[in-house]
Length: 103
Image (cartoon, rainbow, N blue to C red; front, side, top):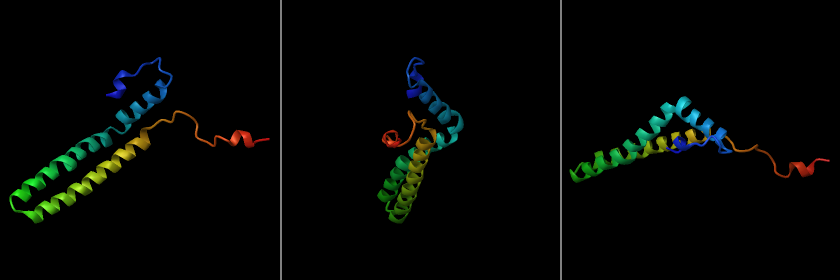
């Protein structure tokens, strides 16, 4: 949603546009996996576990919650992967004080 309102006059347009291209074109499958897996493992499986618990199937509910926890963890890792792979830095990395140490 954020990338729909990019302004070409913005001084950070190049960085935002590069991030958009990386996210949508190169990592589109990872993004889809992230969204769908989070919905399934963070919403669907816990609701299913509640249903199993209400039905008296406590062992199945525990197994479902373990799978949901592992799946949500993998989904969060894929979100972190997306962030660190698609971010375009706004400035150069380096030591701020390095310029003062040169003679």
